[in-house]
Image 1 (cartoon, chains in turn purple, orange):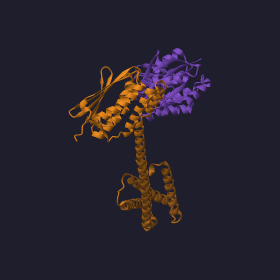
Image 2: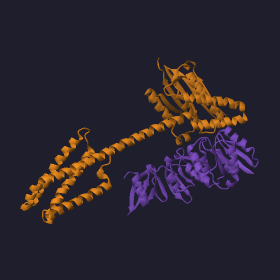
Image 3: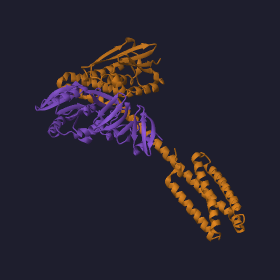
Image 4: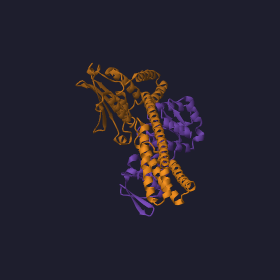
Length: 244
Length: 348
């Protein structure tokens, strides 16, 4: 039995998928969700093998929800119109269905399913690509103590590498995101966030002063009263960004 | 900003190389042909050519700062002649001061003076003309660049307008809902298709120039809301109150729908709870008031866009009435977002 969850904010859109799925006896719909928050809970609870996921939904997008899922199930994206997302899908060969969903296309996606059930690397690539989309790159969605939090990027003071995670420091405390420093260096606005060190990216708006610590080694003071080291190349980038 | 020819590294290198070669050539000429000592030959060549080089740099920068629109040639000619005189006389006095004791040299200098003047004048003139040509080309490519970006901007605006009119996201989602209805409720599907068709027809007719009656506009808005209601039936409530005395008043047909769309976007798309969107239409002192009220999630408001939809409407209001204050937004204590649109009535 393949356990599946449908996540879409429009009930009629879920009805179609359900209707199409009724032909496939080996697939069982275990939950239907109206938004990403519900979806996340249901995925944690049911541990489905497959998820039908809409992109534009209330509160957090389908992409943002999926980023928070630890053991990612196979995903078939369903979307009406989102040039950016569709491009990301095509490039990364993830299955997606355009609304209104064509029956033959749907059946083809299900047929391909067995080979994809335990392989989600392409989904990761789509998420990385989607993070560059204008709709998403002004915020970061994180989970802390089971609570989902949406952080506007302007609220991030600095980012710090921490093993497999990146620590985001904000006025409301620190949050962890399972991504790489390189990922944030590329997705965050390069005019606002500067990688000053192998382990640090800072928000330019937070800089209060830069000091020479010893020969060729600088430190930067942030508004939150934290000193961070600046590498040689980091110093060059920082100076350029500040127009010095 | 135009680039100066002398600020291009490659040109700097070539000019410098050329100047050195010329200095050496002149010195060698004086030494071998006229038989002066190396000291005299080099001093003469360096002083003369150094002044010439300075004058060339001066002329190049001067033309970068200012070029008359008319009589350009005359202006250049005057400057060139003046500079020529300045440098050859400076060279003459400094050289006759340094080599006051060398009679041969003095004689030669007096003899060659007119030729020196001529050579200096030709060099400076050539320098001025190439500079003018350079700045002309710069100017031309700049104008071309501006023209190109203006064209691109216009094209983009046109495209955005089209895309905005068609609202592809809304359209495809609605089609998907209709599609679902054809299976679960075919009769309802038929109604929905006709509504969608009427709405699209209304959308295509819309134009900034065209004023429509409140009656007509509300019918169009109702179609839009009905379609959204089919998509989100379980959680969208709509209250529309239109005062009877407003029905014959008019408004531009492109304003209200984006505001209602915005209300739905922030009210409905950002929450999964049931919501109520309220629209009130009234008239006060000959000014039509359209009030749209939607709940919003204060947490989402901070992170989502700040309502591009509304900025675009403000801009349109400004173009139509030259008054950006006709659109007002306020936030009520219980997380209600209220958008008020005021349309002065044309008295004709």
